[in-house]
Image 1 (spheres, rainbow over the protein chains, first blue to last red):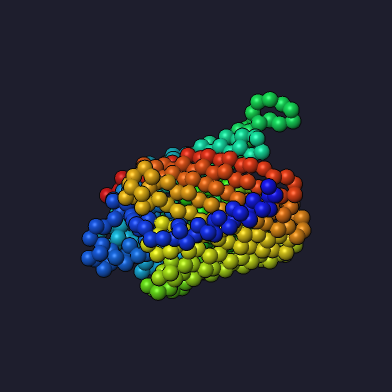
Image 2 (tube, one colour):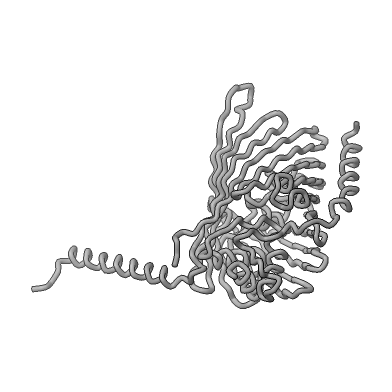
Length: 99
Length: 352
């Protein structure tokens, strides 16, 4: 088969699968147990932090499966630059990671 | 009577300096807030790549150090150390190897205000999304970067100079962030950079989970070429699907990549074996207008389809596998790649 035809077929299949893959499923960006705050839904600050986490961190990488609390500030200062977080978002994330 | 000889005075002053330095360091350690302990992070892995029948084995480690100084400065650095074992070629049997040690960035991040950070030193060139967000080995879904990676990143992927960046606006409805930089020319082996300037602006709409951004960089030496690009990222709400794409162009070449990934979270409740799989598809294409020995793009128009299957294991391990088929006038070829990557994140000391 012509390579160009193969490429078009592959691209077409990919495009056709998009709506199927976009169907609703469980939240893929749920934070790990050590980072998560189970009461986040009831805590405005933590809810804000969770929103920031989903919008800025989880879009690029898996959440670390836990890290010592003494480096949470350093992690956020690194992410503030890498993900262009505002100071308010950084504060919300810190609260979220250290409920 | 208590006069000291010059050598004794020198020895005494050296001791004083050491004691003062030790005391200063100790006071700094005690002054560091409980959550701001310096950290060592990064990834270590083993990658195999079979390209056109030749297999290369690459053990690699990419450590990252981040150390806050006071409340407004963060010094951070990342390096890549690898040893590539590949066939000798030229009719010879056996393998040879090539070592590489490179500094990806070494920068000081100085918080200017709520919406702006000044970055000085060697930093990753802000162009598109791949270089800054997806290039770390513990993040990338495919072991190979996109074909157009060399467009806009000025060959070295890092710049030496200054950068202003931050979040211009961050609300529940919209996020707007920016980065603007200037780089000087540098021929130092570890701080190699080209004279250039440019920036990127991105708009993210949380309700639609859609990000659209534009980048523009200008090379200020040699051919003085302009590079422009756009990127679109989309994650449908409440879905495990994610779409990432970039388009970049210059006078001598242009191209795009579009990547779709679907984490099988709905199978096994997020913790099951199946739920840790992530099938991926990446389509990419490059178009060559003029030859350029300095960019990393293929020398002729090329199409490539990448099919990946990643497995996110517990304990910060992940396995990336992919098969790629490349089509070009210089010949079609298959590329098979596998990588196992371990991500680490540890404090430099226990802290309070």
